[in-house]
Image (cartoon, rainbow, N blue to C red; front, side, top):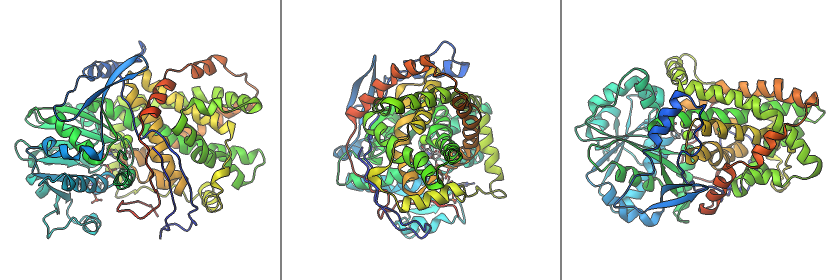
Length: 556
Ligand SMILES: NC(=O)C1=CN([C@@H]2O[C@H](COP(=O)(O)OP(=O)(O)OC[C@H]3O[C@@H](n4cnc5c(N)ncnc54)[C@H](OP(=O)(O)O)[C@@H]3O)[C@@H](O)[C@H]2O)C=CC1
Ligand SMILES: CC(=O)[C@](C)(O)C(=O)O
Ligand SMILES: [Mg+2]
Ligand SMILES: [Mg+2]
């Protein structure tokens, strides 16, 4: 995917919003089977693998299901595109009213995309927003044309009662608090639609299940809400623009659940859809956002920013060599040419510096990543999110970009020379090592390459880092879900500390490069998976900063 991010003045930012140009790949993602199951995987992983073995077997009589060869495995995907909109009436057969519940990051994007796509397809389906009584989001929904007068906006339980498809897009913590009332309000035969596996994780942790008499599906965009809407808007000009989505069919009473899930993904503008399970989705998603997508990249930047100043750089240069180097250079290379291209492009001393940084950072980063994975798989992290949800009114999430790092960053952005952002080899070594460690933890736990590459590579370089590049860390983190923004705040400092304490000290004490780690990196199978994704990606321009009906969140 080609991302062309241009500036937009915002009342909430004093930066001068320099023009920036992004060339990013991976609009597409190809799924693969669970190829890398490790004998050391835990019990959760074993059940994950057995559930993923049911994957690769979906069929559709409406959409073309394509086999894709991916390294030594084959998987199925459905390619999206506006040319498929004429198929939507069939996919949404039996659905007259869709209730989109919530107005956070995903709901504004998904509701508007669905409304636009269904209208264009000539479907007589009402998309209605449901919000809690007294919600401040009523005004925002009205602004983009969902109104009480048109009967497209109402109190959430009233909307749920009327809906044939209930898209439950309130926060995961709120889903856990309200699921009983939601299920009870749904009419017989209605489908429950999720964009996350969190609710399954919660229900399993308390020994409960979804009511058996309903279809339960999920369509999970692998990118933040604002990017789901922006790319869709751009896609009106360029067919194939959008954010990939995984889909899961958890219960299929009607026999139509797969078609509806695929139709939902197509209507969102997803370039590709690949199959997952709710269980595999929540483990990989909650983990990924605490890792390289949000938490780890934040921790990496903070630790490097301090390190480079200790070594004598000015604050501005330290920001350029850390954050700018990642968001303005390294992710662009990864996005268009893959992870290994960063390494292959380095020569001489720079390559040695990369190797030192990679070698010293991989295990410390992996230690934290494995801890996160275990916390998520065990249900601990789900409990943390729910407890956080209960505290939130008393202790709202705070601002993360008021510190020196991000104040300097704002100045750097305003003076940015986009074409001359350096690629610091030490920064690259740390960032790539953390990305590879994240990939390995997921592969060892038995996740398929589709999820692994999406949650560790594509979403980072195509959906999230562009926002950090444009407006800083808070703009990226706080436009994500409540689950993600609280988890990122919790884990970012762990990456910061462990890199400072174990990785950078190892380099400073002259610890030799671990050649086995470097050779494992050089020969890693994931590179072929990423290259395959590069080949199949659509090309599209997106303007991150241009006027859009996308809701954007800034915590003051
Ligand atoms: N953010 C993203 O890009 C992605 C999110 N997801 C998933 O999508 C789902 C929605 O997440 P996201 O869009 O980020 O939203 P958030 O997690 O930011 O949640 C915000 C929404 O939840 C509502 N809400 C919170 N508490 C309550 C409550 N007690 N009763 C009713 N409504 C409540 C809010 O209502 P109000 O408007 O009144 O404040 C708001 O509309 C989640 O399952 C998430 O994991 C999946 C992929 C990406
Ligand atoms: C954007 C996304 O997919 C995240 C980071 O998982 C989220 O917001 O929860
Ligand atoms: Mg996600
Ligand atoms: Mg998430």
